[in-house]
Image (cartoon, rainbow, N blue to C red; front, side):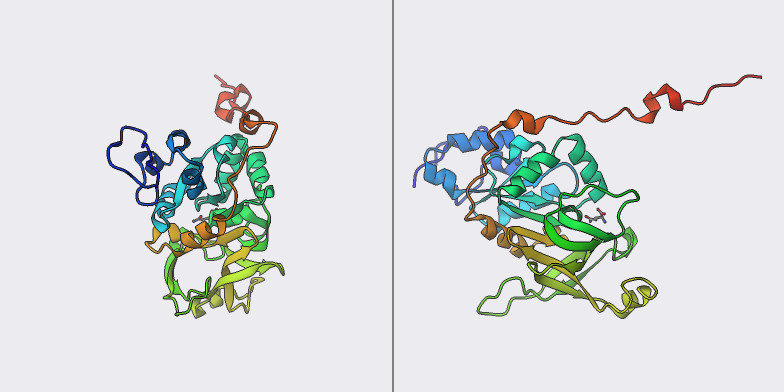
Length: 304
Ligand code: GLN
């Protein structure tokens, strides 16, 4: 195997395989560092050996996802995506948990919706966790922000945004692993739900990977709501190149969900930016000034 020169002052003496170790540049996840590292790789094979996974890094648990991407598969590399051009070379994108309306506002201001849509339309893999699942859903059945909230869409599901309650109702539990079928039975996975959404409807092309059986206490709270009588909700799905989970695998030490996603991405070709170039993709939106800067909202001072 050819030698890889490592960037950012790492020792260049010992032969180092990209399969065996991650350079400091890849550990940082910054796009500039990762790009530097990629250009120092000498052969196409080495470059192809990497599965570059973008992690939307504008809000939420993106650092945790990056760590799990690195941990789950020696071929996988994570890169932080804050503008369209950062998607170059990615075979998949993770949209982390956080807060979906905040994420949508920042994505709009950073001019990210169009590049994200272009990436998705090119048929690359996308995985949304928690707020990321809401972001990927085609519609919010209940709990949407008043006045609506912008979604990336594409996943044929309806979500109930804060189905499990508010922040203090967050919980964790174990759920049987049914996402992949091996020859031996897999242990259950630990699912951490943080003010989590639930999938309350799914189209025919959606494959259900995990369900959560509602405890009696939760079912009692559903009496009188449109979800009355519901015994379980869907919490993980796959639809073609899209994966979505309402819990947070990135804050556990179980790498199986990340491995599943990296395996989905493994056969993709690295993303090339659309012809009309990176410049248009990174044009950002200039938000209006906050009211505090606008004299019109300051009440006139009246003196007696
Ligand atoms: N309920 C949150 C939202 O609406 C998601 C919470 C999370 O990602 N942990 O975005």
